[in-house]
Image 1 (spheres, rainbow, N blue to C red):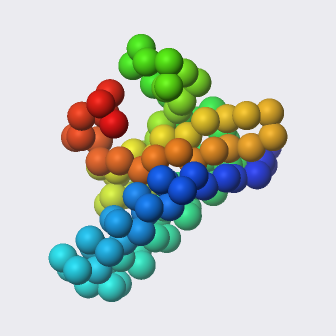
Image 2: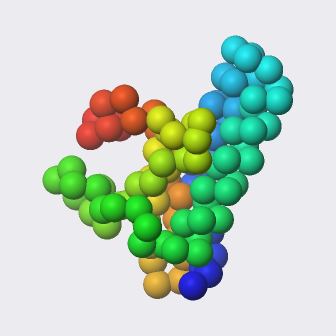
Length: 103
């Protein structure tokens, strides 16, 4: 099953911010590897949309939200997404150690 992927503006900002952080803290090569890992993870989820578990945080805004770890070595980052009848909506990319219910 392959569905259309939509990237929210916040998801795009999250990815750009993380890319810039890797480029500044380490080097451009690591930032490029991060970008490739995000693309590969999105491709995996696109092919198997229910691979990520549902969020168990009891908040209306998270209803139906799923998450999945970015491919190693970036697996501390979680990709949050929703499924609709026609698309996969990438909503946020967050570090797993953040206060996720608040965000």
